Length: 306
Image 1: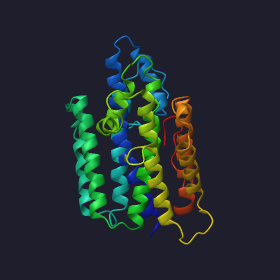
Image 2: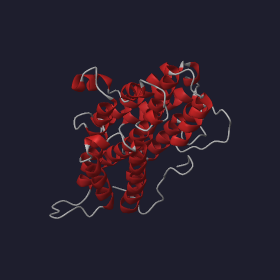
Image 3: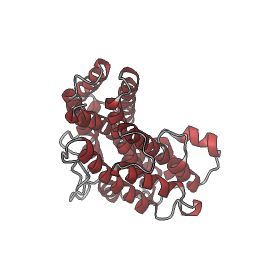
């Protein structure tokens, strides 16, 4: 496979996942503000934007503008949709017709101002559903060959990065008694979590579920496993000792460090642990770029710019 096609598919996966997860994070942020009307909205907005890699000097920044509507903002999901469409255009001969049409139709609706005419709750639902439709079409209309593996790898790395940011949001909502409930709902995990732990579960149980559950597809352990599996299939077979892929080693080490974390330490220094995981995602992207994309510069979080 040509490296430019592989790179485009990798970034289609990343941008679509980024769009969906950015919407999830903003929605959780808004619910947490509603739980505690006394919270300083301006400070909460600055903290959230900093968490997303966008430091701003405004006294009271508009989160919906920076993270949702602004096409020029590198951390908005409108920008992510636009980048996904451009990547799909470059890989037009590889992505299925259904995937291309779904991405293009979504982008045209966004450019036509559809999001601005929606209430925020409806907008977040629209973004989630469109990303789910596109991902489902990719999984069901593309051959599961190298191209699909690159798309899956990009989606998995982005999900690890963004889920780690979502798991850091309870530390921003210091006075919100339902912070973890909102995070679970934001991940689409509330029903599965209640089935597993019951309605009277603790905050540690919620963090444990989203970090360590092997069966929930948005947990960190599950997603790390998906990324490692994709890299294993892309790399050479019959390795008897260990993978020679730096990206696989980085992700494997991160998975092991989480997998064997003592239960009492799951909530301690959680933002710091999630910050380290974001660094691993950046390093992994660079390693994948060097190995498969002929050393092209990898995008990374630097002051909100990729």
